[in-house]
Length: 360
Image 1 (cartoon, rainbow, N blue to C red):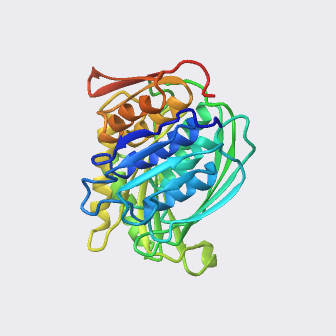
Image 2: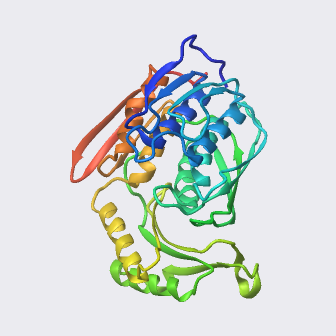
C-alpha cells in the first residue's frame, strides 16, 4: 500500500456518521495512506464515543496498517489515525463482546485485496449474527460475490455462530488478492431463484421449520427451497454443529446473476417465528419492486469497493443514509473519484463511480 501522502490529516466530523463513518474512514485510510482525525465520534448516538465494537475495528486497522493511533479508548470522542504500509499476514482479533465480527472484517479486508500483497488470514471472534450489521451469510454470499466480480476473492469460514448477548462466534477470512477492477451491475440476469435458510442455535429446530413454512406461503416458495441449519452444544451429534450462544436468523438469497441479493431477519425473545418470516418477506418483496440487482445493504458496501477499484456502476433501490455517507466521504480520501447517485424512476436508482488510474 502507499505511504501517507498528506503532511496534515483530513479533519472529519463524526457527529452524524455513526460507527459506519469511522469504519469507512479506517478502510479508506489504509487503502490510500491518507491519515485522518475524526472529531465528535458518534456524537449523535445515545452513547457517543467509541464502544467496544468500534475499538475492535480501530485495533484491527492499526495492526494491519502499522498505524500510529491516538484516542483509541472506550468512550473517546476523538481519534487520530496515521497508517503505514498495509501488511499481509495472519491476524487474530477478538471484539471482546457480542459486537459484530463481520464489521471488523469489512474494515480491513478491502485494504488487503491488492495484487502486490500476499494471501492473508484474518480470524475474528465476536458476534456473527447481529442487529444493525451484516450477518455472515450476507458477507459470504453477496459481498464476496461482488469482490469476485471485481477480480479478487475472499474465502470465508463460519467456525461457529455467535448471537447476542453471549457472542463467542468465530469467522475466518483468507484473502486471494487481485487488483480490484471496475464492474457494472445494471440488470438482473438469468432465471431468478429464491433460497431460504433458517439458522437455529441451541433452540428447538421446529422454530426454523415454522419460519420456512410461513416464508414459503408469503413468497410462494416451493418447500424444497428452504432448509434448517442447526447448531448446538452437542458439537456434532445428530449432524448438529457446535455453538455456545443461543439465537435464530432467517435468511433469503435471491439469485439473479453474478451477485445475489441477500436478506435476513433475526429472531427475538417473545417474537413468534411466523412474525420473523413475515418481516423478512416484506424486505424481499421491497427489493423485487425495483429493477436493480444490488440489495440496499450491499449497495453502500459496493460503493466503497468500486471506489477502490477506480470505477464502475450499479443499480439498486432507494439509497440508504449509509450509501449517502459513503458518497460524501470517498472524495475526501480520493479527490479524483467522482460519485453520482441518480433516480431513474420505478423505484430504481443508478450509482456511478469514476476514478482516474490505478490506486497507488
